[in-house]
Length: 348
Image 1: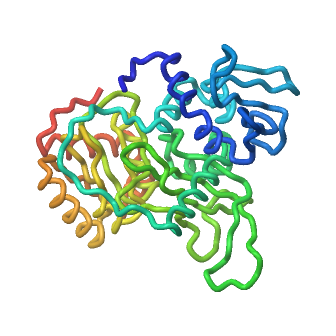
Image 2: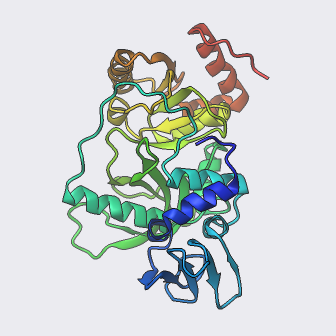
C-alpha cells in the first residue's frame, strides 16, 4: 500500500479486520454478540468500551464508544489511544504494520520461507502477541531511560514497555515466577505479522539490565524474522543488524535508513529478506561470530540477486562505538564505509 493512502482508507481496512484488531490490541476484552467489550482504551478488563465488529443497521464496523467517558471514534482513534502519547505518524505506521504492509514496493524475487509453526510454536506466538499488546509506548519509561543512557534516540512502535512481566531466575527455578519491568520488542515476519516478542528485563531502580541469568529472552519465533524500524519513506535498501541496541545505535546515526534487528549473530545469518529490497547493509559486531554470520547471510542474499554491503564496528559493537565516539562521528564513519562500497551518499 502506498504511504499516501488516506487515513480513511486505513480505517476502513482495519474495520474489515476488527475482531483480529481487538484480539491483538485488547486481549483482556471478550466478544459479546457483534461487539468486543473491554474496560477502557488502555485495554483493562471490563465492559465499558464496546467496539462494533461487523457493520449493522447502517453503523460501520470498527466504530466504538466508551460509555463511562463518552469517548467514541473509529479504529485509528482507538489505536492512538491504546498506544498512548505518540504522534499520528507513529499510529498510522502501527496500523500499517498490523495490516501486514511494509513500506517498500512488492517486487517479487525467489526466496525461502520459515517452516510453518507447530502447535507449541503457535501457542508461544499467540502469547508473544498478547504480551506485546499489553505494553505501552516507551517514552518516559524505564525502557527509555535504558536506551537513552546508551546514547540511543532511534525508537519506534516496534518497542514497548511493561512494568511487570513474568520472570523466572533460571530454567530450573522451582520458585513461582516473579514480575519485573521489561523492554518489549516486536518480532515480525515480512507480512508484518507478529511472530515473537523479545524481552529485555531491567533493574527497577536503575534501568540497567537486570542482574539475572539471561536478562534478554525471546518468546515466540525468531528464525528468519526481525524487529523492524522504518524511516517513514519507501526505500529499496535495508540495514540488517545483530543485537537490538547495536542496530538501534546504527539507526540513531542513520535515521533515514530502515532497520531490521535479528537479535543474535546466529539469526542474522538466517534473516529472510523482504520483497522489494535491492541492497542490504549487514551491520555486524567486530568478532568471529559476526563475521561468520555476515558471510552466511551475504551468500544467501547474493544468490537472490541482492547487493550486499558490510558495516563493521570499530570496537566490540556499534553501541560501544556510539558511546565512545558520539553520534556524529559514528554517522561519518558509517557513511564513509557505505561510500567506499559504492553507495553515493553525501552527509547533510
